[in-house]
Length: 309
Image (cartoon, helix red, strand yellow):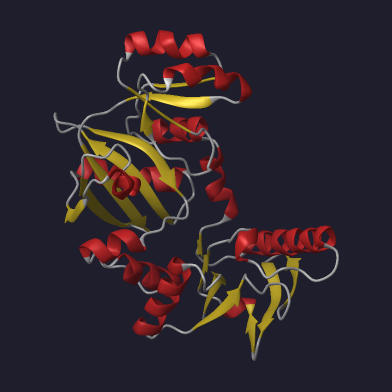
């Protein structure tokens, strides 16, 4: 039995449930928009690992019967408003989430993904160190709160982009004349600057030992927001060089991620540079554009079905 932890208002969670249904894999949904109301999680640690049950509306799931877990935590905006004191409700919600995260961290079955595996994304510079250690190149990078340091960096790398250093999503932009007067704001909070890498974007999804690569062609700096700039995006499935595919799998393993979204760029010289790794990828965007069976590979992984070589 597969356990899905997420909110049905989230399109990715809904898509995963639909794929499990389509594949005929039995699952139970722990709807985080309702949790903890309406659910009961009772468990304890033993020498062999956690033991206990999770009970939801009309079902009880023994932890020993779970073959895999897909979890996609949602923010406060996806929750039901707590009754009573909002501060008390937030504290109870945090306690319930922390207890669930601790349980998922220790289950012996595949968990996509454990909380510990996703923590590297909270610091992009730290994650870059792990990416390099796994064998992929990263762009020249500066993290600073000093405007003069940016100007010095730009003298070495005239074409720069900037983005956040944390896991909070930001729109990647080029550093142009309009942004230079705003460098003074860096003293209020650092940002990350990188040498712009020319070439074509490639999004790689690793699912266990499977690799799915998508080539993205667009004139936008950040293809996720191309439409805001009136630009088009074209996507298609591609095969990576074997060495790059193997390096992507090493990156996922280094970060302890069974499912990862890895952002690369293929340079005009045929080299590959890695920007970051998403531990909870919104893969449906790529699957719908290319028809790649990413969700089927994920469903097979969660069910314990052996993956195709």
